[in-house]
Image 1 (cartoon, one colour):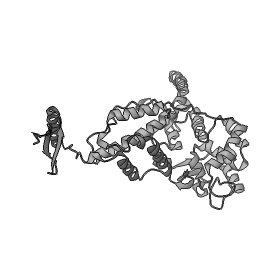
Image 2 (cartoon, helix red, strand yellow):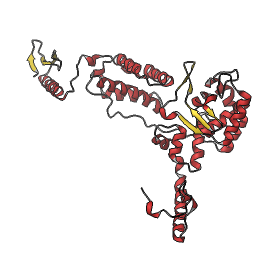
Image 3 (cartoon, one colour):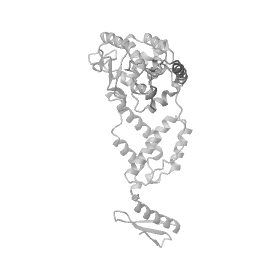
Image 4 (cartoon, one colour):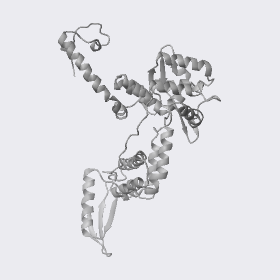
Length: 382
């Protein structure tokens, strides 16, 4: 049990033993604080939640670097981004502080300061995630008993208004860009590949006979260095069925611009494309001459999603083609485009009711693979 002694310096010293049997002590100016600490120590030991106060004196900056180094699953681009946020936004505020000395008010004041300095909500939220992860790892490693990242008020993050091209606008853009990248525009708009997946596409990933495209690699540029790595998530590794017209476009493209190194969309000089150079030399001039700015390469992916939604494609199919890890992501990003489908569903139900009353079944209700036109009234399920 913890004991309390009054010292000659008019302080109260709490003596106790840590779970490993080592003798510990801590001094307080007031008896009430000493009593509270002694009770807390005994309670945390009984609950198995005791942490060594000496470990809590570890500097945040030192521990944050350790945590970042241990996150081996990060892609090079994500690691570079997080390192930038850590150096510029997080460490100036917390780097020299002991983990145990950072409290909730410190964290909230830091968030408020970033908001006042005009940082975007998405940037602030990502920087906060780095702080939160650092403290969570400290808890798991028994450095501190709990995290100061509790009930922190973060700035609201509003989704940017995305631009979607119509099929006619896609054609206009494809005709306006340098001919060697016409097929890239069409592939982006009609497969939904991310820019890094487009530039990382290799010829041996195309199966023209089966109309299959395998997304296995993505090309990124980190600190001026091009890297061909795996896509951002497991779900991003996927196989897509290409439209027949796109197979023909790619076949013609490869016959004219085939690359000895096997890149489907190589640079004019051969080898992989640097996205910054491509954007300046080819993309921006083509956009300005056709659909008008702003229109990013990533917006071709959004345009692909919009086309599928307009045709009533199921959200699970959309998720699979886009390579989203969760259908929640798909619905969060594109759910607002599906609002018009509600009216179409209501009209379809009118047809269902009319058919039921007339004794016929509408063609669209015949199940795939079932040539029978017999009603399935008795086999419905939730």
